[in-house]
Length: 274
Image (cartoon, rainbow, N blue to C red; front, side, top):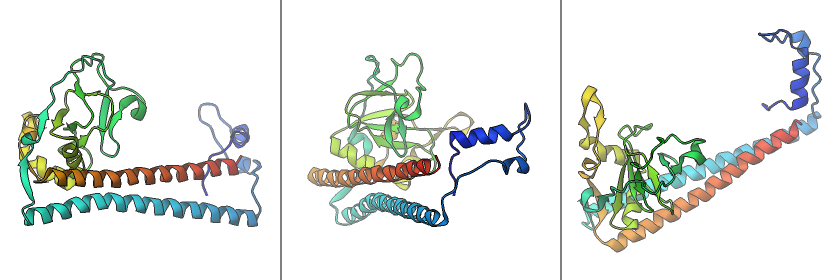
């Protein structure tokens, strides 16, 4: 069982260490440090409790993973069925997205794009701002906009695509592409479609233009040059969007429960060894 030493134990160990620039802690000295331990019966109770929490955390992870798989599987199933019965068609992205070329003259807060968290505030999530001193040339992102970031990330070597769910306008790096969808629902469908790295890679791969030193480059306009499958009927797009959003809301709820369980375990361990 691992745990952090409290202040008293740290003081006791520091007291028996030797050395100035290099600290030494010898076994004989460590033996002199007194450590309080619960009875065997109490230890068994603690182990059982922590095991129950660990199992609950593991179960919570599985719930989240299954819901995430449900989104990917649902899109794949609907796409396959829709294309086969002609209720879906392939549309070039430039027909449903328009590049937003609005610059950050109003000094909106700078955000980044995360694979897992979507569009995030740099200071709140990353602890600091990585923006330039002058952000007036940054791109403005409004609620529902689609963002394409070209930075390779994990299993998405050509970049990631996300919809902004920030209620207020934000700014992003001028290296990002920002696009206004014909409707929020269309943008929302694209958001979930590109959650699947396979869909993202298959869409972006044909658009790659090799630059100097074989760097991968996809311009903002070229990003719109490929096709994706999408329902013909706007009502079906709206239904799919609402369904996927409901599943995602369930995922966020389950993630909150997971975070709460992890914090409970941490709090319990801290209290046990004070």
